[in-house]
Length: 255
Image (cartoon, rainbow, N blue to C red; front, side, top):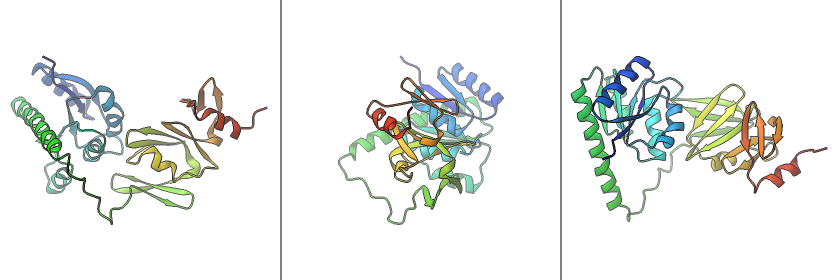
């Protein structure tokens, strides 16, 4: 019988390792340990765990609650929150993501195992209910729901946690699809936003940006070299899709 596969998101190395040892002693398989929400969202589809255990306090710009909310949009992987925070505000935020269990530190091994079993059971039950209701039309989002990103002249405002961060279009060098969200790379930062690459493309001016692959958009002036079927930008190799190569070459001055 295959072991239940778990992924841990915990920014304290000692706690993460101790938790991993405890889980493996219980008979679970720990497929990966990450320290940030951004890393979890990039790695989760590689490992496809049966359950994710998230600390609410993580490295990076996404905390565990933000990460769980984005994870829910792109997968059906169940998740448990573990935290030393038990204040009403944190719990109310956490409840909005519909976690499958909630552990308050410190907890013992028996409580941990019980929470995992309950979470997996709840996930199975939710899946059965979703399947039974699959013939019903999906509810439409509220008419006044705000988009995740806002455009103002030559600037994008990216929603990062509870604030909007201004990013000049001229600072963006490439964007990469990550399922229903995407990475936006500037010279200084890497942003993970809850928008598809297709939606982002609509906000980027065609004269400056071009889709070169189904998973990539690049800023044309940021291209440093083209080698074989790859674009080089700031040390990153970006593939050129067959359907985009001719259009790209036509836009470049080649001597």
